[in-house]
Length: 444
Ligand SMILES: *Cc1c(COP(=O)(O)O)cnc(C)c1O
Image 1 (spheres, helix red, strand yellow):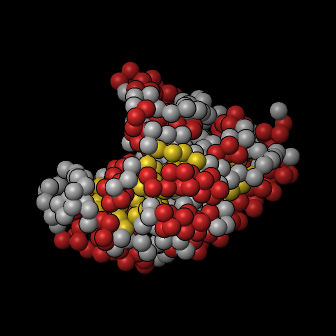
Image 2: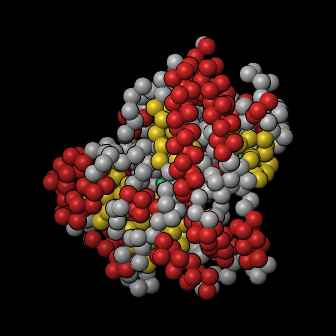
Image 3: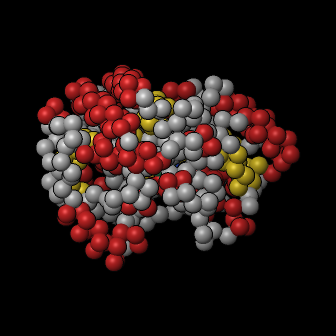
């Protein structure tokens, strides 16, 4: 299809998807559900997934030759868009010297120094290969450090797929409407206490009852995994105060928000400092790299200094470290934050206007370069309110936008991640496509 949005007709031809369809049927024979991560299957929006051929700057190209403005950015990492030349050059250069050593490199030391300089809470940092590993590890460290077992997390927050953290989780679990995951022993999640997000009273009450047993409170300081949901004023400050009072640790999962809401993450932007932080996505520049870090006295319980074991064959992989360092250098040299804040705020206003003009009730949540359109007339501040959104309407909106050359997350319960590769004209084009799509929704 022609994706020059300025000439996109009101009713564009249906997308060519023959090759994506064929590949998906072949994939389903050899990969569970045809995908290597569940939300990629488009199950909640229907219609089968796109297979991607390549990405370039703000664009994603599928195997049928369609071009889209990408509002997903690989679920967060690509804040400068696809195939950023500085990142590609760094990876290529590193690859020419070998892909993995299983031994220390100078680049890991420099990278750790750069992360520590960037993120307020981090005095020491360990590299791992995925956000799942980072979050799993900071929980283990918190338990090892405090000698306590219980963990508070929040409904609709997602901290990767490790056993203890799969209780009432967001992201794919929310997308597929699963209660929890099979295969996780009840004994493992018994120590995970799940509370409603933004409900400080519930946290206080839980600490009153079991405060001596609670090792940590873990959360997304701004949630992306039930769609974009912001912390209420005072919520993060309240958690900081309660955890300190009870000798528990405050853990920020900034896998999504780190280096996105500010160079120093949500903690810099919102001014609340956790004890430990998990990072991923942007920090790896699009390669499999993540990290956890925090107060030096806490991080020193990690082996080989202390008794908490955590390891990885590919941890600190030289290609991934090179990509991450190039990404952080780009963020320091050309900070995209003011531009992305302005454009995202403008887009949110245009989306609200477009929906209002069509008479479609929406709640648009956004902060920094994260944004979600919820199809509900209620404010969205926790998981139950997120679920008031009509996911079937979202599915129709998703396809209407795709037909108009805009690739949104294929799930109501995931945030859009906007990149600095999107020009002001691209943002206008997205708003125009949304106006048409809202009008189509209203017609039925
Ligand atoms: C994506 C994400 C994770 C998991 O990271 P993976 O690299 O997918 O394992 C954990 N926490 C949050 C907040 C995330 O957004």
